[in-house]
Image 1 (cartoon, rainbow, N blue to C red):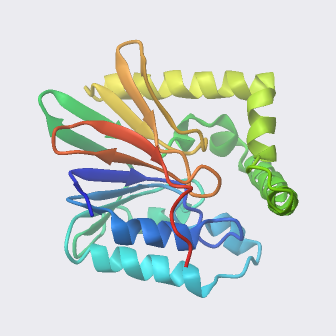
Image 2 (image 1 turned 90 degrees about the horizontal axis):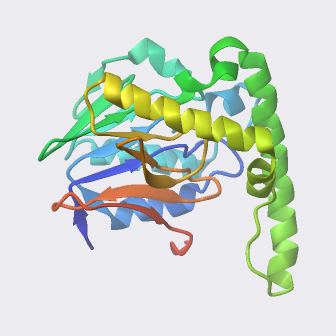
Length: 246
């Protein structure tokens, strides 16, 4: 079992039917770190407000994170789906702290501005009702994904993401992602950071943009990704589709 300097995850969306709670719990059990940063949309308040059923596996994840926070710092950054955290901003519960954003200083001049990303989303900021309709449509695409991939598995075919293909194939979506990434790097520069780490758009990424190290932790709905930082400051965006289910 490897121990990391820091682990950053985002967009677990506990409370939704398609979140990978079992896999995420297995990930937490098998990856230890000095600090765990949950970069928004950990609990999906939007889904719960629509009456989606909260399940025991979701509670197990919450319990695990609380257990981890008894031993190491855990930073829970507010996302748009867990916007209820506004009521608890800057609260400390043991080693668990709730923040709007966070700066991770790795030393050697490597500072990363960490925020969820919804502040760059005009629909979330100004037309939340449109964003919520979009979230419902995304969940419908995921439901179709589930049934379609059961059929593909029966045929011996690999996993295929309908929703991801739709997002990547639409020019407007591609332009949105590009604008989002550039906006994120500008926030890093404004906060005197050499890099930026965000989530929100469910697109894991690791690249340089205008001299800024841009990282996106992806999600635990489709991509099952996390950012892992070793003690030598090596940063990896890793996919965990091979996590054993129990």
